[in-house]
Length: 259
Image 1: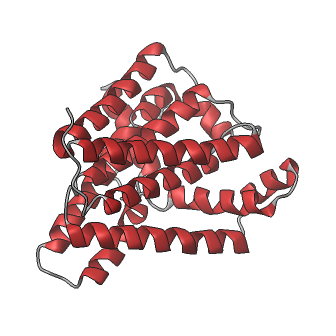
Image 2: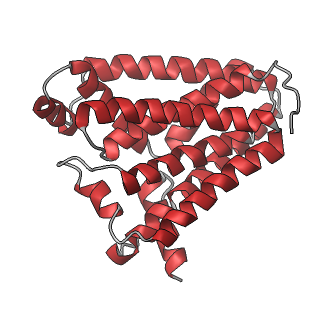
């Protein structure tokens, strides 16, 4: 029952689809954060399902690509996109740390956030157009969503939290070796599914997500010396677009089976 309640709490926190009722139990936050990648699996499954359904009736590919570009953000309730925009504003301001922290908490949208959002959607749309046009290995969209959230959970477990981030610090409380092992298993399961489903393509896409997330989290750690929910949203979004671009580049490439 605790596992179900923790997963339901994660759904309520990290997905934009309305749920019939609200549950909050702070003693279950460790289970909730371990369930975060499973929420990613649900989001990825809906993203994959939408791609399959939209490609069946032979809709214009540009419309399909546009819908699938925004689909994961809509399903997640734009929560991570908000973090991407706030962090972009702070990073590109090139201000002292105190000013960057103030910018992250500012509810107003700055010019840098708008520019970076445009670049993100341009890259996401181009990659999604190529993926939809090729139609190969669409279920790797699930792997992308799961892995970006697994890496976020690892960051919560092992990285310091900045002073304004009571939220991520709370999620990291009461975490035991069992919780950490569960996330390792989910990570390996996602990569294993990708390799089983798509051979080396799955490994390449998984690696692209890891590289994108690692690069982004390195950038924010360099500037902020820690993490927060917004900073993790930034790294997640970049990790996912890296994975999507890798999937797009592989649509017309034949990779030899080497295992």
